[in-house]
Amino acid sequence: MIKATVIGSGRWASFLAWYLAGAEFDTMLWGRSGSRRFQNLRETRQNEYITLPDGMRFTDNFSEAEAHGGLLFAAISAQQLRPFLCENSGIKKPLILCMKGLEESSGLRLTEVVRQELGSSAKCAVWVGPGHPQDFVNGNPNCMVIDSDDREFSKNLADRLTSPLIRFYYGEDLIGTEIGAAAKNVVGIAAGMLDGLGLSSMKGVLMARGAREISRLVGAMGGNEITIYGLCHLGDYEATLFSPHSHNRRFGEFFVRGESYSELAEGVATASSLMKLSEKYKVELPICSAITAALSGRVTPRDALSELFTRGSKNEFYS
Image 1 (tube, rainbow, N blue to C red):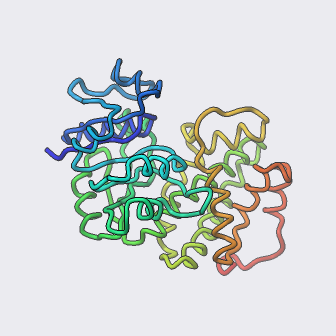
Image 2: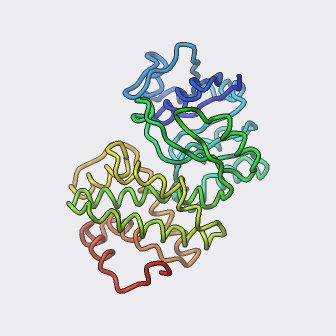
């Protein structure tokens, strides 16, 4: 059996531990000692989404967690990644980032953060794509993607992780995969705003234009524009723009209604990061710009979206 350690104790981390155990990985779950979610999992082996198997081990000692795992699967907030790596700078095991986001302060992709903190030789991959724990545990299958700078590593992971519940593809465009996976959360916030304003019929436009603007950014960054039309971005729109389980969509809906939302919506920080990349690479990102303006309070969500959808004439495919 391959040994694996899951880093984190939220809904996605607990699902990963459940999935890996079901795929016959010898799985351990690490969480911070002060985390109530981790303590609850450790004591009851369950949360509102899943029940973890009796044989699974838990630890709040990261040295023990790394020693156990042949592979480390990280599922923490994107903004927590650098502080976590600074605390655990001696990581030598392959690290699979099961996270979608960009570093807000720098606009860096998460694998770039890993390489800065652990060194250029650090073995790192990303696991992204559509799916919610609530759907998976009910037996609803989906497809996801593994990507890294090492084609064989990506392919081997995809082969080993595939099951009747999740079919894995492997990617060959880490830039496109990471940017696409992060940016779909911003589009998800926009979708939630449309829902909250009673404008859900505009989601089709949002989907078409969102994919186009992010593909332009990926191309400018040196990635493959076509990646955005795969599982990392467009393929994840149903789960992000329409699902009742989507934190980003729900955040957008709550935001326009003036209601607080307590769950993590990675798209908030990602919107800010994408504007840094927009400026750096001289690529116009109208949707991201509109959402950033609304979130900052510079304009109302209705005005931001109205201006977005009433812009001057543009060529559909080349602008």
